[in-house]
Length: 316
Image (cartoon, rainbow, N blue to C red; front, side, top):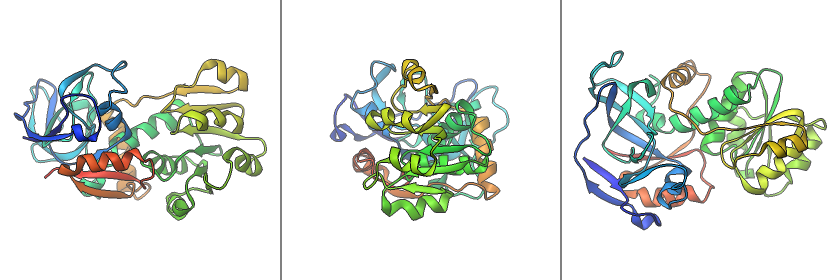
C-alpha cells in the first residue's frame, strides 16, 4: 500500500512516500480502506520527536490518526459493520507506528463508526480527532451545560470549529479568540462574541463583557495564553486544557477547577457526533484538501497555527 513514513525524527523533509504491505485485521479489528485523512498538530510533534518521552514509538512510522473511508475487511468477532460501508475513526493506538497517512489502517472496532451520511469522505476526515477532543473536554471533563459561558481559544481552528458548535448545542454562551479575518467564520458556527487576539488583550476583553468571569475556558493554546486564562474564570469555574497541562496548584491559587484531556478513541461518541451532523445541528470544519504526496507541505501549513478549520489529505 502507498504510505507516508518517517524513519527518524526531524523536519518535514523526513516524510517519505513509500510502499508497504497491506495490514490485516486481527480479532476485533476493522481494516479501513482510507479515502482521506487529516493533519493535526500532534502529527508534526510526533515527527519532530516532541512526544517520544510520553508515548512509545517504532520506526518506520506512519503519521496520522484521522481516517474516513470504507470497510475493507473484518477481523474475527467483529459485528455491526459490513465490507464497503462508509466509516470514520480516530485511529490512535497504544504504540505510535501505523497511522493514517496510508491507503489502509486497522483499528479496534469499538473506535470505528459509520460516517455521517450527509458528508463526503474529505469532510468526514477532518472530524474524528477534533470532534472527540472537544466532546470529551467540554461535555465530559468540563460538564458544560445550558446557561453557562465558555471561552474557546483559537476558535477558527479545527478544535475551535467543533467546540463552538458543541457548546451552542448544549445551550452555552460562546466567546472565542480569533483573528479578525475569521470573525465571520466563527460567528457562522455560532460564536456569540469574537475577540481579535492581535488587537485586544483577551483577559480585558472578556472581563469587559463578563465582569464576573466565565464558567469554562477551553484552552487549545498553551504557554502564556494558558497562564492568563485563569484570570477570566469565575471562582469555582473550570479550565480544561488539551495542550499544556494545568497544575492543581494554579487551580487552587485562582480558586478554580482544572483538567487536562488527552483524547481517547470512542466509536460511540463518533456516532453521536454523526447524528448531530446529519440532523443539521453541527457542520464539519472548513477544509483545505491536498494530495497525500503533499504531506510535508500540509504539516508545515498546520505548524503555523494560522489555518482555518482542517487540512485534509486525499489518499486515493
